Length: 242
Image (cartoon, rainbow, N blue to C red; front, top):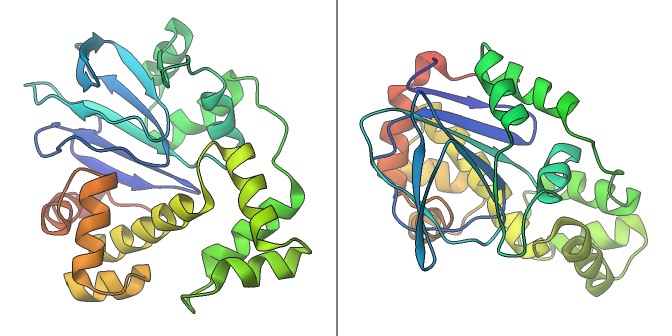
């Protein structure tokens, strides 16, 4: 089912394929990991978990173990309604097993986009985030001027920078600085998928240089940019932006 496909959506991204190129990492997104046909195996702090589907919260170090069958990975931004609904399902350790209803929703879906839409209908969506934070995040997504972006966004929504950072951490469960890096990685990944060089992708993402992109990608995705580029370009026929 869609084996080897990468899809970028509106504040989410997904991949279905072999989990054979990642190292231990943690990131900002709420991640769904679902085994296709057979359970998925994850290495977590102090344990190995094998399950049909797992929800992984922000900042939880993990690694998907390479197996012969494909695995579906869905990454959802923590500021979205779906991200907040998934976050509400997590246990104290930042992990939760996917429910039978969620797994059935995945199996009935014909694409990752279809799955995201169905999942949004399935879950009891939490109230939207603070309107000032919502506006600030939209400003930050478009800000390409580098240093001072948080101050500019805070001023535009009538908050101080410390207060905006406090609201972001409280409502998203991750710091605003981490969210900004994740947003940059999304832009760089889309650039790589489109065929850009590593240096151009770093610039498109807003990173200071290629080495900066490499450090952040290894830390948050568990891949080097070169490996990520190979995966993204290999699946370019299935690459979509919604």
